[in-house]
Length: 165
Image (cartoon, rainbow, N blue to C red; front, side, top):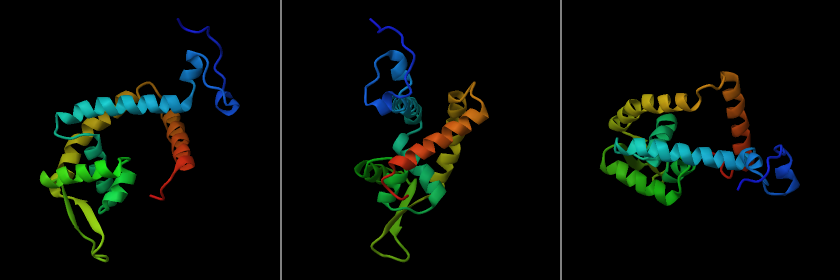
C-alpha cells in the first residue's frame, strides 16, 4: 500500500532524512538520475546489440571521435566505463577493425587508441538513430528546460568529479 501523499520536500536531502513518500522519491534527484540513466542505458544497449555494439563501444567510438587519440585510462574516464571493461571493449574493437592501438609519438610508453575509418563510419551510421532516440526522450520538453537541465547536470558532475578529464 502506498504511503499517504505529502508535498515533496526540497529539504529532504539537506535534512538527512530519506524520502518518506513516493512523491518525495520522485523529487529525489539522485534517484531520478539513476533511474533515467539505467533505463536509457538498457534500452540503448538492446538497440545497439542488433548492430554488433554495446553502450561501452558506442561511448568509446564517441570519445575517440571527439578527442582523437586516447589511452585506455582516458577512454575509461571519458566513456564512463570501468578500466577493465574499457580494455576488453577496446580489445574487441581492435579485432573488428574499429580502432587502432599504437605507441604514442612523443612517449613510447603511452599506448594510444584511435578510430579507424570503419569505426568512424559505424559511428556515423548509428548516430542518427541515437539522435532520434534522444529526441524521443526530450519530446514535450522546451529547449529552455533542456538547456537548464543540461547546465544543472553538468554542474552536479563538476561537484562530484574525480578526474580532470
